[in-house]
Length: 474
Image 1 (cartoon, rainbow, N blue to C red):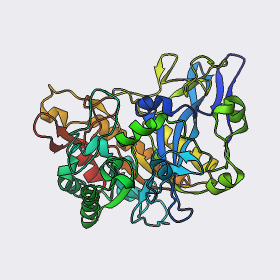
Image 2 (image 1 turned 120 degrees about the vertical axis):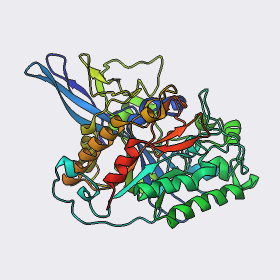
Image 3 (image 1 turned 135 degrees about the vertical axis):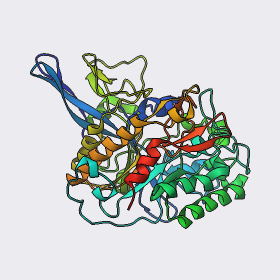
Image 4 (image 1 turned 60 degrees about the vertical axis):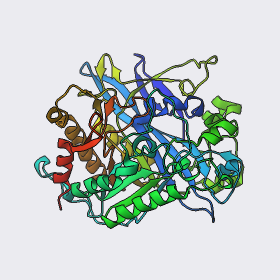
């Protein structure tokens, strides 16, 4: 992986930018899902030896090459990848640090476990007109599904032996959308829409309430996830499991300082085995070092990449480093903005922070193909939100044409990337239901199904759910 500073022309226009800050992430963890959710990604890591699995968290950020053409702004987009957070899972150990350690590294951000995966080598169907764009426009084994996360969905914060955890913000997921009690109903929603798979996370604090095996395993928690997986399989849905999605057990927060622990180490160069030289020169002692053996162990060790794409932003050069307030926002020597010369990168259409830019998804996928030797990819999150307006009549609240257009346009962009030779195997919409969002609580809605927070969390299909049902008809 290479790292470049922005290059300008004589008119001080940015011509090219690559690279993204990779550092001090944990010191600003609270802002991760707020600012950066627009383009974060997960990677599943293949088994290296018994008892060890690894995870890589990627963050892709669309960078832009800017110039003027006929006095209009012309943006040619490419993406810089950030490789963050490499870790080992070993529940065979009783010490929580050992359980997260690999050669002295301590961290687990996200691991996607693919259950019942299928190989698919069928070619993409010939180009369709927009009017006939549907499931058949994709390879025969292409997977369509929806995504969720334990803390944002389950509720049951004090039920089934679950221990406390720590999430910043004034809202909380103690009840969320009560998936813990209503998962069968929600699985039926997915089945009725014609979905193939469901991506969900396992709450660490529900399985290990006190953070480690020596303090006991919660059998009720194991039973819940067993039942959920069985329910999915019995309804023809493939489970995609995220092992950790930010709900840290309170015991680890209290004993070790959680994600601010100095024993946390970033190990991200899974493709090339090391950090870029320019990155080491800039970050110096703040960048972790690892042995040649560790480098060889992680290099090329992932099986597939999962990309969460929401929107894209422009990047501008910051030539002088901020040496006072050092953070992951300053290390990259860049500023991020969603507009240029007052012109947004895309329409918001009522979203609170997402500007729709479908081309960015295709650019990201093509960049990944060319930069990382065309790995297998799943789009593990893609979606758009709208403000939660409690005064809207239900009929109006279910009319989400903007979301239909968003998914439609991004699926078109995705299909074009597949036609360009990108090895994409599946697409997961965020999200199945309206839910608790980390930085927004219940003030925003991402679901293709409506949750009535004022009437017992009843579920109602939005127009986008009917659109997906029609789109997925076989």
